Amino acid sequence: MLLIPCPWCGPRDEIEFHCGGQSHLARPEPWHAVDDATWGDYLFTRDNPKGLHLERWSHAAGCRRWFNVARDTVSHHILATYRMGEPVPEALQRELAAAAPRGAS
Amino acid sequence: MTRYNAWSLLKQGFAGQRGWTAAWRSPEPKSRYDVVIVGGGGHGLATAYYLAKNHGVRNVALLEKGWLGGGNTGRNTTIVRSNYYYPQSAALYDFSLRLYEGLARELNYNIMLSQRGVVNVLHSRHDMEGAARWVGAMNANGIDAELLTPRQVQERVPLLDVSPRARYPVWGGFEQRRGGTARHDAVAWGYARAASALGVDIIQGCELQGFRREGNGRVTAVETSRGTIAADAFGMAVAGHSTVVAAMGGFRLPVSSYALQAFVTEPLKPVLDTVMLSFGTGMYISQSDKGGLVIGGGLDHYLSYAQRGNMPVIRHVLGAVADQLPALGRVRLARQWAGIVDVVHDSSPILGETPVPGLFINCGWGTGGFKAIPVGGWMLAHHIATGRPHDIAAPFALSRFLSGALIDEAAASGIPH
Ligand SMILES: Cc1cc2nc3c(=O)[nH]c(=O)nc-3n(C[C@H](O)[C@H](O)[C@H](O)COP(=O)(O)OP(=O)(O)OC[C@H]3O[C@@H](n4cnc5c(N)ncnc54)[C@H](O)[C@@H]3O)c2cc1C
Ligand SMILES: [Zn+2]
Image (cartoon, rainbow over all chains, first blue to last red; front, side, top):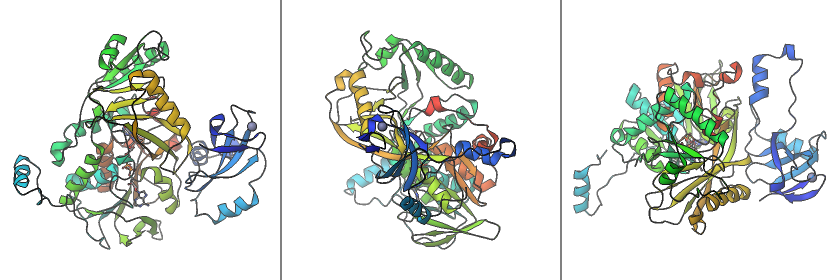
């Protein structure tokens, strides 16, 4: 069972939360210049790393706010949580850059 | 290869069972093959077998980083069925079920196929309407399926609480009688043994670590934990690790990896002679030949490469067992485990070419690819050997995520089994 530190409410049991998948996705713009490959990728292709992953969670049975979680997909260890709109914490940015190449995007 | 039959059994009985030979060879990898298949689960092994058997391509290596069947093939709840909705899926999964029906003879290996039926239990008017539509589609696709009344459901699953007080009242059900179970290890080992006998080199403890590519991007060799191995064509069937291997080739896939759990109880006397699945809770259950009840449910809720599984899902699935089959409430669990499954948006597999020339893929079976092992292997072998997709596989190409021609089987496979 995970203990997830909601940036608004503090540490709470996993069952209060809902995972909403990868964070920091930007819809490709402008719509008339987006080709099929970019659009298909935006709709269907997500990061799926074996290791550090940045994802959105909502505190569904608590404050009902969304926030970001940096979590290891092998150990399930939560390295950081940060609010919506905040940038990826700097230490994690370095770790992400050092991680194995994640393929062309 | 020693053929398994009554005579060899008798002979070994007199020889104190000491004369059996290894079921497959374990050679050192050569530096070059015609085809290299990565992933020693059912799909990889079946691919190697059908390359040799159907296409005469025998200079083949199969690389497995751990041991054969150590991934999802040896962790699944062994349900086979072909009750999917769309014609493309019906063609795919029924081809597989028909191959399963002849597989023990084909491989000279007892895969313990038991067509005991798969009974889906419905709990509301909406379930009933959905099922009527689904059964109609299956029948139109030429696949057996029938609706059941609550009384028929009760006869098929006497353990089920069908009383008016039930938390999940039983409105009816539907069944595919040709569905059932098979022994998962036997499917992997049977294909391995038959492939090895046709000349395929089965190499365990050999991890793919990277691809070597020519100027035009074509793969020419793989780097492995046991050296560099060259080949003309490569196939990958690595399930939950598909995006990890794709990243080595510099491309991405619309695949997400989740843990899927299963449970088995202490052995009981026979109490259940079919496979039962509840639409209300997603819990499904069958009884193994050893007597253990084999139980499964839905996916864990977030990406994972930990073959472990989380507590909330355990509570949900086992709570459903205790609630819906109350007589089992005090039965003890013997084991719990998880496998990492390759989930795709439309719950249909990805078969065929990758963006890397010379590299072909079989993945995306998610929670339900055990039933598809024979067809998955057949299709990948066909594409590699002939250079073109088989008609049955063509709709399942990776390019459907560009064209939008998805085959959305969420209803048929959203609930794992
Ligand atoms: C709990 C559970 C229950 C299930 N129940 C059912 C069911 O009832 N019915 C059904 O039809 N399906 C079921 N499934 C799904 C089914 O098990 C899978 O879809 C199927 O086994 C996939 O087979 P595969 O050969 O593609 O993958 P796997 O059997 O996972 O094989 C992939 C292999 O690739 C190897 N590999 C990975 N990376 C590398 C590398 N870099 N180098 C070399 N080798 C590598 C792995 O070690 C692994 O052995 C279930 C799955 C789980 C986890
Ligand atoms: Zn909160």
